[in-house]
Image (cartoon, rainbow, N blue to C red; front, side, top):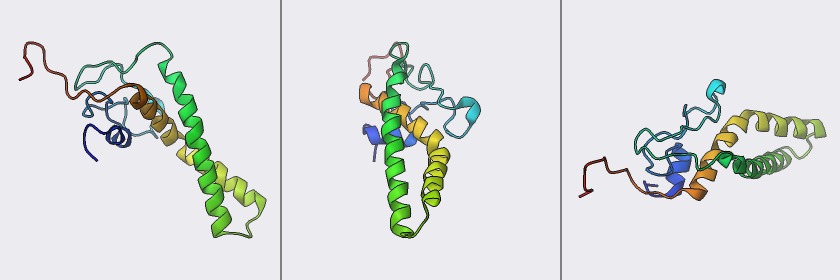
Length: 132
């Protein structure tokens, strides 16, 4: 995994434009005071992380898909590992996993959504330089 690959930006929560600067105000998705706050501009390349008002509403679809994948994974894991588990154990396991991984899935959905629409452009050339 190296710069230029979308997976690099997604897993490291880096700017989708340059893959160097931080994408979120706080890289830890479990800091609830800054939960999911995307920086307006990358501090490294200076490019905007907001195309238009409401751009990240589309991330709800990605979040839904991630939550369903989480649900299915936990449900299958509990069913396979504990075949005689009661229904309440299955429900409690799935709910606990959704609450535990919720902030992470929320952050992942936003960075995935951004990487669907922004492509890697490398670090921006500072003003006054020719880029050589």
